[in-house]
Image 1: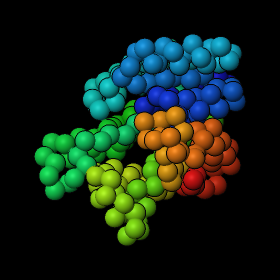
Image 2: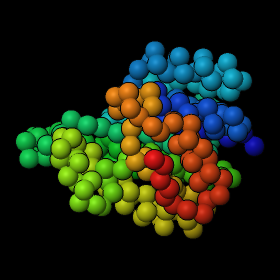
Image 3: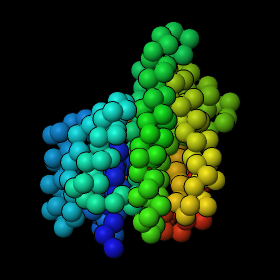
Image 4: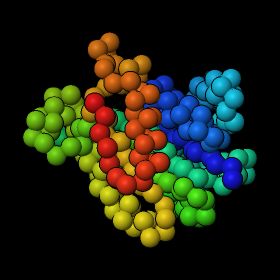
Length: 229
């Protein structure tokens, strides 16, 4: 049976590595993001590897565009087997000085619209063998005073709180969807990834290592969360 993974929040780094890994394992790949040029380059790169891929430009912070994207993927590539949520938002770094709209927006893209996309894809995930939701998360959400201090120092309070919310969301969704035979899992990335916007030249984590961890979680389906870094 044909399998399709939707990579939401496509860019350099983790999302590219996940697209390549799952594509190599026989998945068709839907690339989703705001930059049409980046998506088209990604499609060409995957096709050069013999992977079926298609671009779906969308602002994942816009609920209506999320809805349209899921419908478009289904129409072009068939039922969705796996949904990979790699999208995140920044812009409300200092929660005490950020306006309320920025704080709401910080949650909308990585949390609220993740749920929106999941709801829309869920009939497919239930019907497909191996249906899964896979979530990229970050170490700033780990409950540790030293990490909390780091989030403040980096002016990334918003990202820390959102990552913590995503971690809990993954846990409750895993419990909710287990009886439906839909797997939910996350990889917590404990540091900057080489070749991404967070890489200041000293990043140690390889995107391919994160993708391999996602494949391990997906294949074994025994753990909900894993760490890399």
